[in-house]
Image (cartoon, rainbow over all chains, first blue to last red; front, side, top):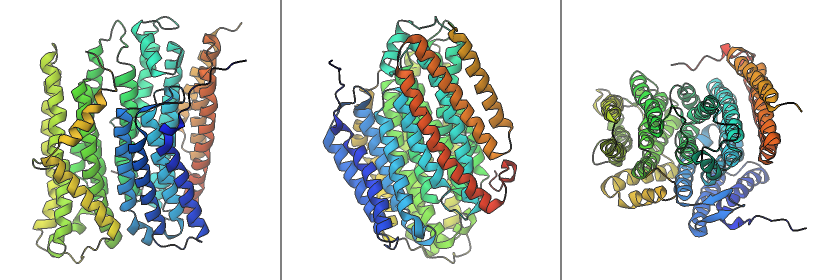
Length: 501
Length: 100
């Protein structure tokens, strides 16, 4: 008998395979050296991530495992972001390791690498099953990482909250997926699209079931993205979790949710519309979520006194800005989403790295402990200010361009389509919320620079953390003045996702 | 032959019980069982669809969902033990240090 074996083409998976093996290497090294190896484990992890990035550059685009694993422009773009996030999270974790996680470095780094592997698989998936597996491989290690300070009540509580929400949301998602599979007869997004296009559904139209399934999927992914009304876990988890983990969560988990969202809703299901639902309505639904995220995140961030909590609300708001790019459902929209996420990587990871350095030294995350820091450590304060201003979207920095492109892509679509006045409203509300955002970011800067007292602390960052801060600042400044390379890289994404004309 | 709608109705009922359990229950272990119930409802629906469409993708999906559920259970129970160690309780109403 002759079985039609799919083409495996394992070489396209090389970066993922390498990262996974490297996770095992790191944990074995830690155990074999009797957990007595200083920062070597951390450097080993950084080295592994760098090698994985190199491999990613070498393998090129192609398909493996039948069509289950696709390395295209979208996948490569997001993989670069995930590897970058992992690199910067590891870089900012050295201080925490020395103070609090002395005896469990191997597990920490191995979990982080496995989570990164999951994100990378997710970016390459083209099919419900692999999307589900990728998301789970991303989040399950993160549950454990959030609760990594086993004796710290806050950390364990944040871990268990994250776990409950994560497990619940993935159960919702699987149930939604089961109906999608039942209605279209396939788990492959491309075939699903064909089924929708011909409105060739297996059990007739079943409009209401379809919409329920989509709501469940959206809820499942919304939890990962921390979009309102599924955002409540984010501030708690960011506050309790170790700071490098919160940093990794804010970019990595958000990116993972974003790519899953793009694959399922933008790429896979745009062709679906029932009699009572025009394709444009997709955009409006996403728009409502985006507005809710921007308003809620920015308004609630104002009253926070803990900087990690403030950054958590700010990241909810940032997710809102990112979703605005999705509303356009156009090639330039998706490119602006990519660009935004790339810049967000530098600014947010940088801000969290700075918070981590400060926390390692003082043990405090309160905004008021930053008072007068500019007098004793002016350089550090300036770096922190650059990150916050970029997150707020102040012109010469890259955050401004990111916001500009996102809004411009929506305005562009709004001009071309009829019945789009709501898009202008959305852009208006978005611009208004950036003013709120400026208020709380500037508050931290005010505390650091214009407080009458002089800080008792002088910030000394370990070398890897310094490197991360430098990468962040260079990224934010350089791509603010010279965005072309990233813009081109991001525009490449749209060629791999397919849109309405 | 039992029609597919029968299986789907059982799945919906299971899913409903699971969801209500997650929202109502105060004990982490019970809550956790309810999540498993939701996953099993999804599995049942997948198998029913797979059988009636005669496409095997659903079966493969179910095996992997079961595997993931096991992995999740391992991490989850470990965390329940950790939190019991430092709180002496597994009632989620007690986990309220983190608040906005």
